[in-house]
Length: 298
Image 1 (cartoon, rainbow, N blue to C red):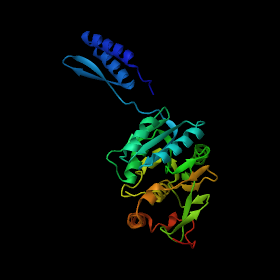
Image 2 (image 1 turned 90 degrees about the vertical axis):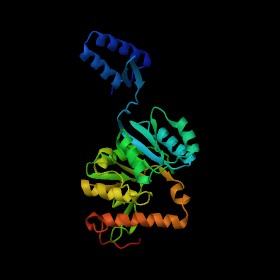
Image 3 (image 1 turned 60 degrees about the vertical axis):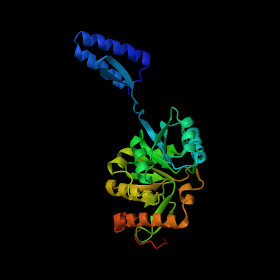
């Protein structure tokens, strides 16, 4: 990607372009306009001459994006980000924080969090969970995206083992915590794997290009529950790949704020809506069950 031009150099190029236009060398003038745009500046022509307007350059491509969505609780986000930065330095990574909170305390913290490896995407007004997650997916610069719940704390290198797992083209999705459907999709129990039916969104990794190709998270999941499983089934269905638990990932699960923040009745109502959506899409797909004859509990 071309380097960003500083304002002094950009002004010099703008003057060069003006001289070329006066001498009617429009091809060379257009070439300078293109160079300025690549360097982060848009040329605005007007009756009183030309001026420059700064553009936001796309982020540099990365090997992996560490992604999380915030709905409040900046202390959790700070703990997550500290772990990412401390334990990912050996990889070409970025941390991308999607602010879906419309919360002043979160905004204040995020104003200090952005840096060379940390980007912030604000969603205002807030959107449903899946739509906000998709905005993060679209904005990610990593070839691989690892989605985290912000309540997860990294105590060691997570990216390395995840990238190793996804280097196998037969793996469609990887993560820390797996589930297997017992008898039919909809009756889930935890499974240490390594091969499982789906993975929980506490730590959920996939190739960005493939996730975008299948449409990302289903936007009808305005609440987070089961949106992770639905994407796992869709990636496995479209790609023919496996869902893999990566053993021993150094993570700690702390309080799950979105779960705790809802009252019991509202939590059950939102969960039931997502459950019906999951069954509508995948309930009859016994071919996606790792062990269709396994007896278990819901």
